[in-house]
Image 1 (spheres, one colour):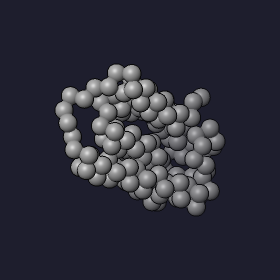
Image 2 (tube, one colour):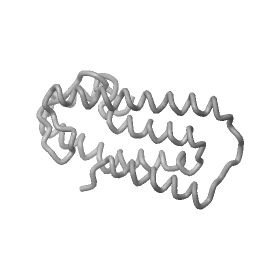
Image 3 (cartoon, one colour):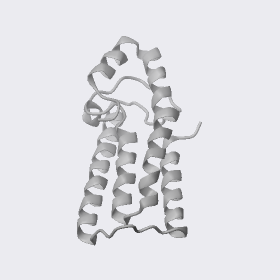
Image 4 (cartoon, one colour):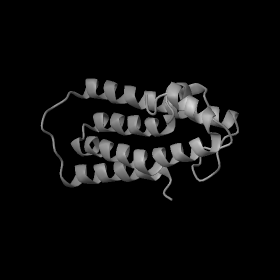
Length: 147
């Protein structure tokens, strides 16, 4: 079992390595707008992550996917997304790819999305629906998987 943050680190590392080895700059994008847009996505990412961690700690629910979930959390960023921590990593990768203006990093975003979806989210959904039954199914009807 690979912890999901390692998928993020792998995609980030792969994108940076490919950018270093094979830099691709098809069009130019000015530094100031690129910095503003990239930093905006990074800040949104930080909000989702911080809110998610705070709510999980407050509810004494582990954020480590290898540990058993204590309860369904529906506060903080979990009101908007069933997977705010994974969403935050996707947004972070997007923000970094804009900031660095890296086509390679941008191309790793769908890879990260697919890894999260099939290696983390879907197995967690099966686990949560088996453990919490109707409570989780009602939550999943009212809150989207991503946003």
